[in-house]
Image (cartoon, rainbow, N blue to C red; front, side, top):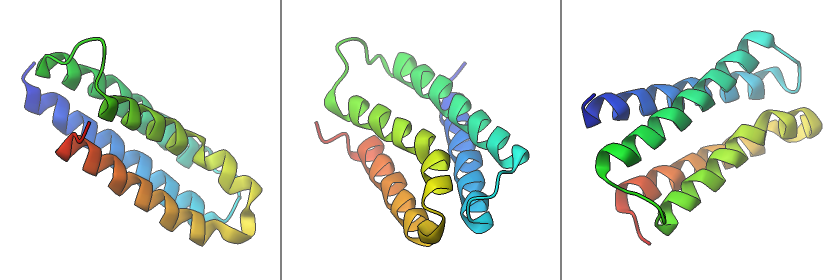
Length: 114
């Protein structure tokens, strides 16, 4: 598969995950199976396609620091629903904080600073 295929798959997974997080923030801590499934599917899609992107780009072990940063931020975004359930009164702040983390993740991917 071409590199652009993995890139679009990666962006589709990120979009699905961010939409699910936005819905969870709006519901302020309520459980919603559809949003949880969308979040998990988006995480899985972004992870698998991200590793496909690395392979297609010829980035092999040991990974550069920006890849480790993206993996760490992926873990934080993955844990976000559990945090949202616990801080029900502050979901708006958490929502904007997660958006900022997403922007940091995108910056790492585009600029590859280290």
